[in-house]
Length: 174
Image 1 (cartoon, one colour):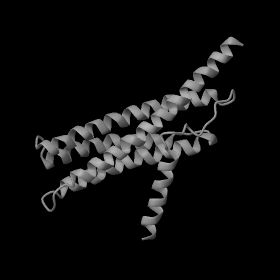
Image 2 (tube, rainbow, N blue to C red):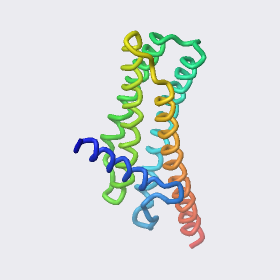
Image 3 (spheres, rainbow, N blue to C red):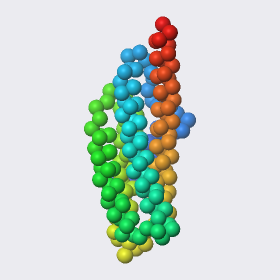
Image 4 (cartoon, rainbow, N blue to C red):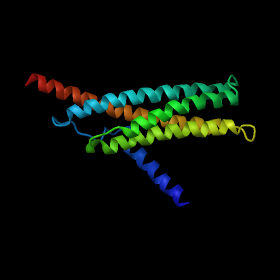
C-alpha cells in the first residue's frame, strides 16, 4: 500500500510539473544559452524517437481493436518496440545535464520510462491473452495520457526555443 501511495504521489508530481500552462522550469540567460541549445537538440531527438515508438504502438493497438492484428502479432510488435524503447531509456538516463535542467530532465526520464512500462505491460498482456483478454481500453487510456504529457513537454520546449531565438536576435543586434 505504501508503494502505491509513493507511486501515486510521484505521478501527481510529474503531472503537476507538466501542466500545459507552464513553461519549462528554466530561464534563458546569456550564461546558459549554449547548453540549453545542446539539451534542446537532444530533447528533440528523444521526442522524435519516442513518437516513432508510440506511433508503432498505436498502430498495433488499433490492429487489436479491428482484429487485423492477433494477440501473438501484437506481442511480437511490442517485443521489437521494447528493444528500441530500452535503448531510448538508456540514452535519456545517461545524458549528462546541467544542474538547472535537473527537474526538467527528471520529467523526461519519468515519461520515457512510463512509455517503456506501457510496452512491457502490453506485451505481458498479449503473452497471457489465452488466460485473459487484453484490456485494450486501459492500454489506450495510458497511451493517451503519455501522449498528452509528451505534447506538454514539447510545447514547453517550443516556448523555450522561442526565448532562445529572441536571445540570439538580441545578441546579433548588439
